[in-house]
Amino acid sequence: MSYEAISLAEAQELFSVWREAYRAIAIGGQAYKMGTRQLTRADLPEVKKQFDYWRNEVERLTAGTRRGPRVKRVVMRDL
Image 1 (cartoon, one colour):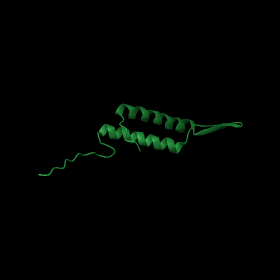
Image 2 (tube, one colour):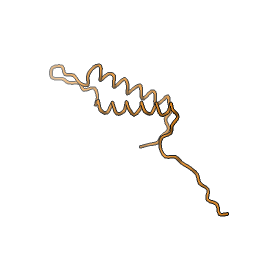
Image 3 (cartoon, one colour):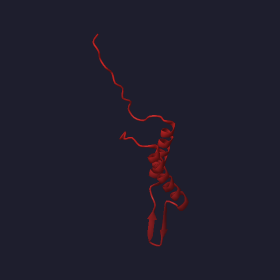
Image 4 (cartoon, one colour):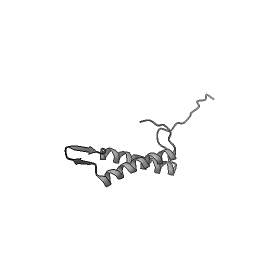
């Protein structure tokens, strides 16, 4: 997984996109069929996974907690 920095605004925007996708599936159904043709909106488990991920990222960025490895610097000295 990449530890690329992302801003709170970007996380909120992506959360909004996934929330709308989740909502569209919940309201309109995941798939429907008309005669011999069928439309599948999206994979609900994947949308839910991304929805949860971005919700957690927004909460994490709002709280100010860090994710990923912590880097510390140590200076070795011979006294």
